[in-house]
Length: 123
Image (cartoon, rainbow, N blue to C red):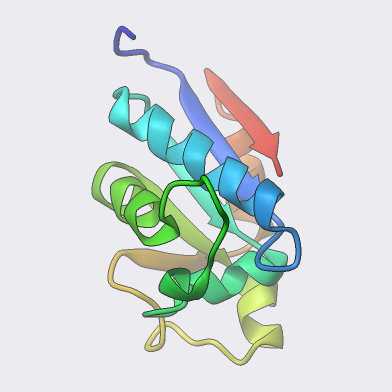
């Protein structure tokens, strides 16, 4: 796939409560990052827990790529953001999250999603 100037913004709203939807979001984000597409992955709802060290390793879904590997790929090549409100509801602070994960709110998501050349998808 040729490198593109488009950005992919992926918002994942599911975690272990909807494992297939969660895995699909991480897989799409990591695949895009591996292809050289600028990627921004947003962790919201139950996926917020994956911003914490070790939590992705607890996720299991048969026949799916390992969530820690997918998360690592996005962190290495893109941006991972934890929703401000989702973090607050779970009492997660910036000191708690994995290196490279930022905490930001709806205004930043809207800015990214509406930027020229952006494509946003929500899982």
